[in-house]
Length: 207
Image (cartoon, one colour):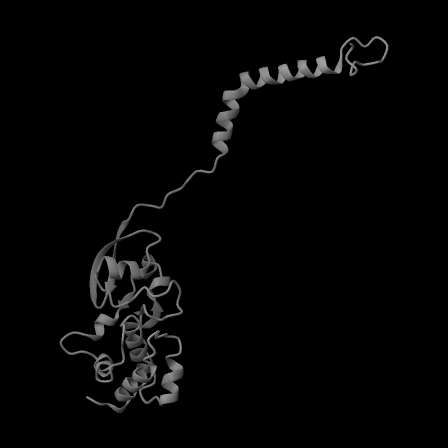
């Protein structure tokens, strides 16, 4: 039986099927010959995986002392403070600034250490909650102890820094002003009332 796909025009001597077989063979042969080149070209077009630079040594001014640390471009200030300098007061409670638990000072301004790259802090003065302790602790942590203004302790360092910073700017703050001023710090244990009492004690100048 003749191929129904044969060309019916007068003089046509090649069937459609034969034509397709022939063109397919030519394409296959071309692919075999040019295959390695095509593969190499495709490999060159693949996106290259770029890894971060290896840790670099730098210096940070923390609590009045200069420390030599090794940081990657992605290292946060919180990472360096906790895992290289063993300053564990600032806590990794949240991945953003909502908890206030990792509040530190950078050139005198309160910031969240987990949202600040360590390399961005080079040449600046960093102060942590540890700077308020020592043989003669600051009045704020002392007042926190007097009023039992902590339970699990995770929010406490951030609250201590926040209270100290707020009272530095508002030494005669009222209870309403203190509550509003500490609004950015969260305590999951609910010791807000005790924190406010501690701050009021400092305002009153209790020893």
